[in-house]
Image 1 (tube, rainbow, N blue to C red):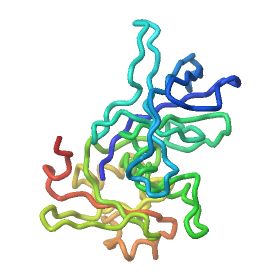
Image 2 (image 1 turned 180 degrees about the vertical axis):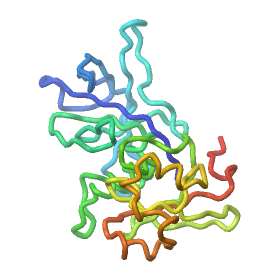
Image 3 (image 1 turned 180 degrees about the horizontal axis):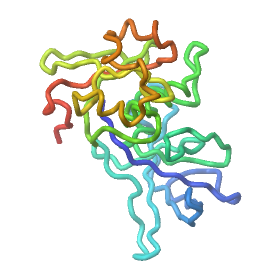
Image 4 (image 1 turned 60 degrees about the horizontal axis):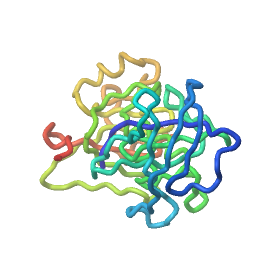
Length: 252
């Protein structure tokens, strides 16, 4: 799995069309209140999605300076420039702000879209378990937002291994690419930090939010993933990073 970032927010105006098909124009306001005009260029089923309820939208935004339409999303690791519309918006601190009148165009190369494609669909439940908290924890994890304050500690195109306790994602430890447990995650950030993604300096992360990590790092407790939830029951998902730095980057 790959982590990265970009996303986009739109606030559709009341007269925005309901049928979203190729050619649909959406006049909207950005989260700063600036007028934006989006065009839907394509609508495709997500080939990864077994449930059939995720659509990938090719989205362009009108550039008033050049009077041209430009792709809204950067290409993802598969070379696709697409977005997934998600109800609500996310704050600068990475917190979901539910609102029926707001839609986020989450690019497939960014954390919000990636976590949906991982299977953590915030609108669904699994065996009665709401997946919205898992999606929130996943967004923190993809961004390596350890402190839960919106600050990322990763690089675009970094490979990680992700798993959870409800079977959506399972750990995959390839013999040729040794990995190490990185962190355990909740919607508030990393509940336990074993080793950072691009550093071995746990203290370097802790200094950004010492209260958040009091008693919650490998400098305090040496925990394997199976023992983490006993100490921190709010944990929902886990991840590992690859040990060698050359194994952490996507091979283009």
